[in-house]
Length: 64
Image 1: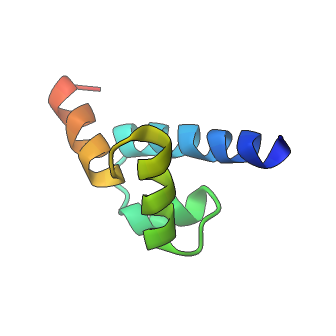
Image 2: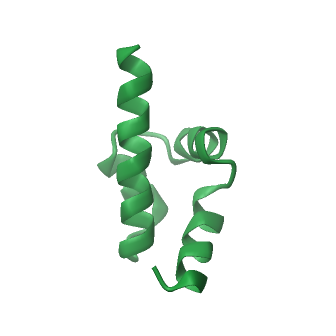
Image 3: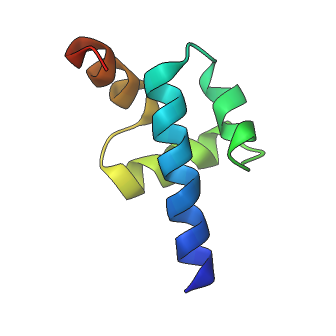
């Protein structure tokens, strides 16, 4: 469905931003279309299995 596709696109963009920038998570949430950082975090965790902070930390450890 289109809504699921849009969410996937937002999550992919958020992943790229988390891995390649030091922007605060609330700014990344807004950049990918979420007004609420906490709702973004819940959606991110549901979609990827980890919260945005952990995802960012894992990317930094891997050197991405």
